[in-house]
Length: 241
Image (cartoon, rainbow, N blue to C red; front, top):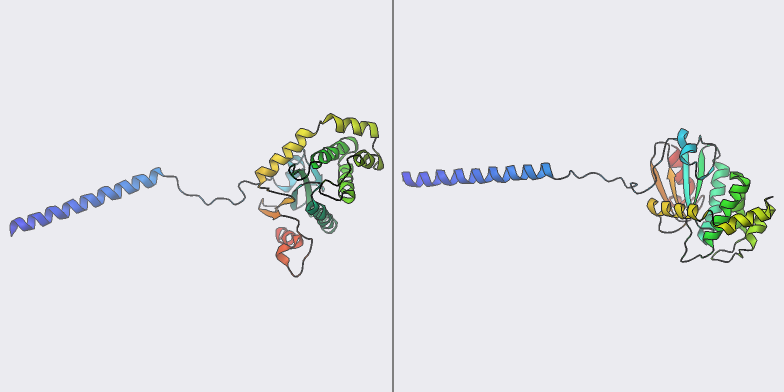
């Protein structure tokens, strides 16, 4: 009987020891393992500064605004994309109705496999900016979207004509465009688009005053009362709150 009690006691001790060893192992493993973090859903998107720092943050971009806006929309676009053409009108509506509250930053993302002319058109807008400044850039961009039928339908011979219509020197413009000096700038924008998560165009990021970002993936309409979730106005109003 005594021997049986001893066996039970020894078995109990063994079980306790095994439990403690397992417990210590688990604790050690937990300490060595990285603690899971809640991933920021926008971690692969843009890094944004506060509104007062915006002019400096976007010094290499085309910025439509005065730098004091509470919300910035960074758009990645392709001038031969029919959806981008439609979204251009949407963004013009935004700037008309939210002047002073919303800023617009435009970046290039030519979809080469679909639109072989878009990259050269993007370079043309940069030449227009060089020769005429930021205001002429936006006018030149508007002109391209206005006259192109999209999907590589624009005759590239129209590019210098647009420049002349805006008061730019034709020879200077053609020399700039022929030089390809802005090819790297366009490619840099395209790479930023990839980093921001773009897989097509238009692709935009609404950036709130606190740095919170909201993706606009596609050519949203300005206002769709019956479908507010597809309304850019609804998204902007939420960002402004």
